[in-house]
Length: 223
Image (cartoon, rainbow, N blue to C red; front, side, top):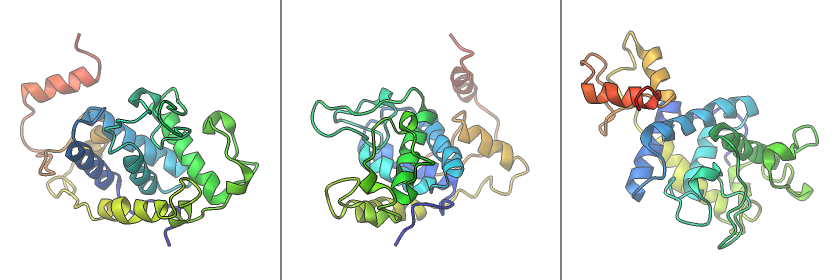
C-alpha cells in the first residue's frame, strides 16, 4: 500500500522533468514549461506544509488534467488540478485564485481523505464540502478507489500508471555536483530556467541571447 501522508519519494527535479515530459507527450499543454515548473514547486512547498506526499498529488493531477492538456469541462485558469467538483459535462467544478491556492486545495483534500478531522477541515481551502464519511477513509492512495472517484481501480491507477513511472525518472548529471547546484535548482523551481530535452542544464556554457530574453520575459522585464 502507498500512504498519502509523508515526505515525497521523488525529488522535485524528478517530478518537474516527468511532468514536462508527460505534458508534451500528450500534445499541447495549457501552460508553458516555466509555469509547469512553478506548479510542481507549489506542490512540493505546500505538500511539506500539509504533510502530504507531493509526488502522489502530482501523479493524481497529471491523471485528472490529461497531463495538463485538459480538454474537459475544467479550464486551466481555474487552477483546479484534481477536477474537484467537475462531476460531468458542463460542470467545471471549483476554482482557486492562484496556483498555490489550487495546489493547497488539492493537497488539503487528500489530507482530509487520509486523516480527516475538525481541526483541518477548512471549506475556504477545500472550496467543495467533503462529506464526513470520507474523512480519514483513505490513508493509502489505493483506498481512493470508490471514494475520490467511482472506479474501484482509481487509486491503483494513480500508483501503477503515474506514480511508479514518476519515480523511475532519471536525474540529470551535469549539474548536481556543480558549485552552483543550489542556485540552479532555485531558478528551475521558480520557472526561470529549465533543462533541455535530454535533461542537461549545461551550467558552464554561456547564456545565449534567446535564453536571456526568455528569462527577462518571465521576470516581466520585457514589454
